[in-house]
Length: 409
Image 1 (cartoon, rainbow, N blue to C red):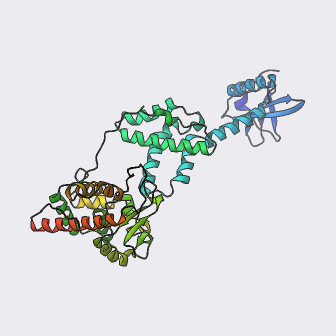
Image 2 (image 1 turned 180 degrees about the vertical axis):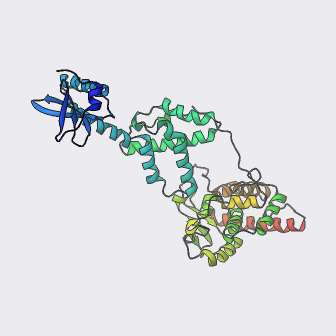
Image 3 (image 1 turned 90 degrees about the horizontal axis):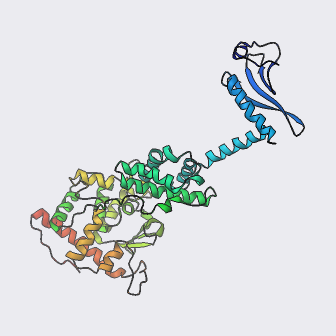
């Protein structure tokens, strides 16, 4: 039997019925009545006649069809059914795609990140899509090694984005641990990279700690012309000095009006411990005024885009910039450093009270963690003293005569 030529394959005409043009060894071109041309390999395996599709012409040329034919014949000679081998290979490819780093990462993102702020979600997904998926996204997650992950992180580091590289490493660790929990991986290679990346430069968040400047800041906040929610968030940031995310996420259900305090559950706190913030007279007055505007919703400071969302992460930061305070001068987090410094150095309050009110981990002389009600009476007096001190600095700034003194009661 003569072999087919490329010309014969190209010029093969359809008939009224399907016809076969043999090339030898069980390989043939099937010409359909509609003009379609398909490569087929007829073989016997375990006593049964079987057919293996090798593709359509012209997508698969004569030379390519012969190559596939030879590979299939070799499998038959080795006792392997090429049809079954193809099914396994297809299933393996599908499983590899399902268990790729990108597939697992997207599943982790939708499972674990749904309750994070929109800005946090955007930042995380941007890092995944820009810095991680292009390099390891299509790799089966179980096969990714520490050196391979390091090479990916080094690409980020090489452009000077050291902090971004560290955040990406943290994200990959969360994805790998999710893969382990769901049976797609056995270990987290990011744990092997401790110390492998350059250390990020320590950046202290800008804060104002000079009493005269604090007074001017209070005057600026008082005269700020933004929305009532943003202005109130500014004022409470100074009065309560909690973390920016905790301030923005304050809910009306957390305000205990009778006890005059703000009660936060453990799941909302960085240290995962419940926290109490005594509310000074000024804070209570501010909250009562704001309750008339936002009290029907969940959040004390709702987003301008809808009451079901909390104030944007950039709300207070943008307000500070509008007032003339850039990131090198004062940040939303800087209210904490401002209070920490002046309550200690300016007003002389007990450091453990201050640290406890900042929701830092505080332990007694025996190494035991204080509970949330520890020294609550003293802390309440401290919070009122702090609010009165800020009012005094504001008044003295308006009069041009700031006096630094003791304001403890």
